[in-house]
Length: 232
Image (cartoon, rainbow, N blue to C red):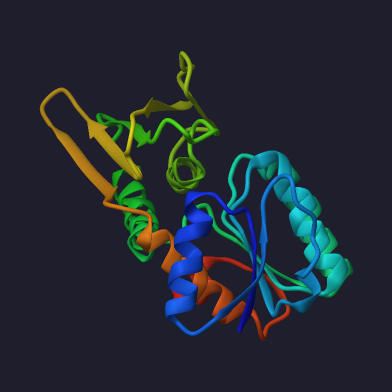
């Protein structure tokens, strides 16, 4: 499979290494200062760029008929627009806030626990997320996905990293050097705390998941998520 890498930072380089190990070819390594030359040679594109570049990268793929897997976060206010554009171009699109197998299983666990806890109003739910200092968006896309999973089953109508109103889910955001990603969910009462957490040890899981998603998407049309890839 011929892959275009849209974004060639730390994640892009890990994706490149694992893709080559799996027998794939890299036909484009696009940075923020380079163009899309070579994109038309790709069977699929993987976008791990920055929020300001994501929409342009995804649009370029749709215009050229290239399936695109995007793991860039911080641009989701335009997600619906990209879904519409994908359908208009009969394209292929898969967005994931996190491609790690473990995190996607954690999403399911989080949703199930929120459903269990919904009838016990003595417990107050909160969240903590920790990432490396180079991460641009706050909170992380993974944290937002977890928050959405909780809000589906509770009275919370929004999340906030600032001072919360009663219906807002609090997210404590921390940025610490060399932390790939940690997410914790707490249900706290006057007598105890229930906690679930996911801790990434490196970027390998994210990169491998993105490549698996690209392998899966390359022969399909439409809009998908990692739940489709992993059959969750």
